[in-house]
Length: 182
Image (tube, rainbow, N blue to C red; front, side, top):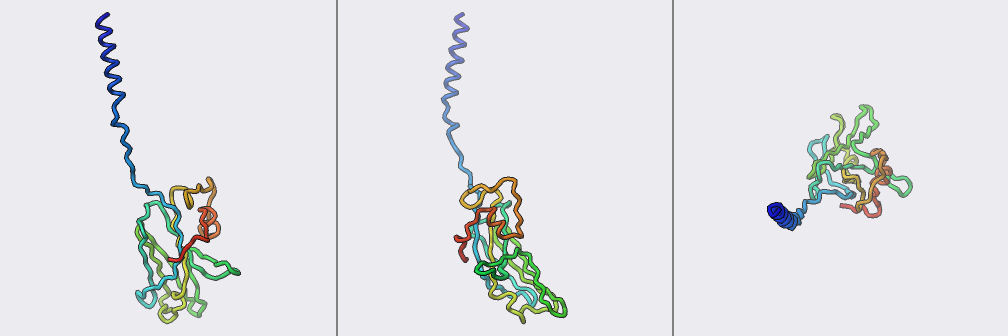
């Protein structure tokens, strides 16, 4: 009987000593990679690469996480006092006898975004600067984590048409009055 009590006592002391260990109180803080919507307007100055290619590139303030996406829209006109936005890539046909076209294309990495304006070989952008000067673009950096501006949740099960600018703004809860020019 004394041996059983001794083992029970040692077991109770061992259990108490183990349960009082404070080493599990350490909380490791990881880097927060959540992206909150970032939207800004740009009126870039394009750099000539050759007569048929002009380019603009800019670095992000901080790197994006791999699953975030960037959408760039070009203002193609006005509807009353409201701008009309067209998602890039966008091809504009000049309407001349050669049926020349000007392509507005963008690409992005986690570090930067680039807009290329490229024309048909028979159409010189250098001779037609209205196709790359005084253009306004809206850049939307959208999170892949399912939250909109300020962490507001997006509607589950709702599809968004990225070609429809108003649909994207609504889906991601972007307040257009807060969009600044960079």
